[in-house]
Image (cartoon, rainbow over all chains, first blue to last red):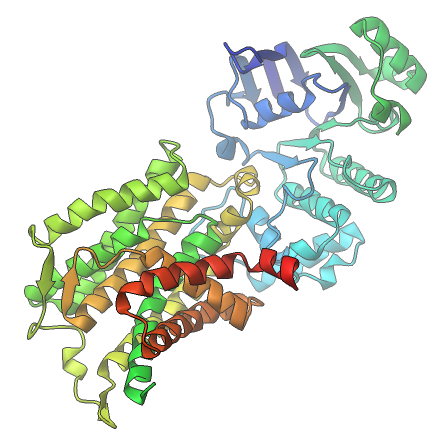
Length: 264
Length: 289
């Protein structure tokens, strides 16, 4: 489904700030797999997602999506098969446009963009049905500007937009990190619902150790631009948060100094 | 202020409103201040003058639009393909257009169109109270048509994507659309409208001067901002109408400034001050109110 082959990425090559962000990453995802990614700051989690989605050009390696080499495809082309939700709730929606208009752009993914009517009555009916799934009452506010929504509502909407045309791959980059805990839980359970209903192949970065084991079918841990641990099956089911932290410290040779990771 | 001056200002405001709509497309929907406007305005005027000299004033408006689209596309390509900052890309196009406009005008710095065929000629003679309404009415008709077409366009799928690109280009790319292409369409459309305004001004004053475009982008911005402040931004239609009313209001302010005895050479200074004041409104409000 997704294959990342010896992917390397260095920022600021040749400068004094040179940083090897990804070091020969190999990763292979099966159909319908829901992978959670954990790791400290600067581990390369976001960089990995940004390389897969084409935001960054990679230095070495290949990215294969659906047995097609997309390494040299620009971001917008890859996006036709990839759904994305970012950490910053402002990034996923156009704030000066209405909920309906935002959904219409998402719904047009992969279709020709020309002088067709931007949104039809049929579309509106469908959007309302989908919005009802969120259980946030947004179906009654479809003509309101997205700028009026809260961060959590915007993330839920972005999630809906990322999946309204079923993507081959869903990339979630700490999409609940900027939300308050109650809303974060809601968005997470919505994520689980959408992913399992549509059997979406998903990569989700989280800073929450507990969530990394609770959600998904597989957990990988990154450190220093490498994948340190790849948990699946029984080994993952038997894993606890405490042992995960212990393993992390042992394998990375570093103390977990990230309070955010431990406390949440 | 006499009625004739008032009507004259409204007439100018209507023609310049077409330019202001163009500036609205780049400045507000694409969120990109595009300085090529100063050049594409004259380009439209020059093309239209040459077409008038050859006896095709109406066709001239269409060709002016296409020429303006071309100019806007160059700015877009400089920005998207060669990664030149939008402001600088616009300045480069504007500078290049100065030479190009002189070429269109066969090397002359100005072209008079006295007694030549203009788009207003066929309608002349709608006189009431000593004022010939032909220019005002024809310009209003062109403006209304363009307003409707622009409104319809902004409600198409491409129009949605255009507005979203100015709002959040990252999101548009994440949803599978090539934002480079969207910027190209937006800047082409914007400069096309500006060129049509230049063409109508040339036809209206029966004169083209290669320097007539100086400060046009500022006038366009002033119209957009005055319109937003005075008439509101609630819906898309309202925003577009606000831009038009802003353009007319701007002309009335200028007429008033002249009326109280300000020398015409100071007008660009006045324009610059108006825009600076309007743009700093949020900060000024916070500080002094």
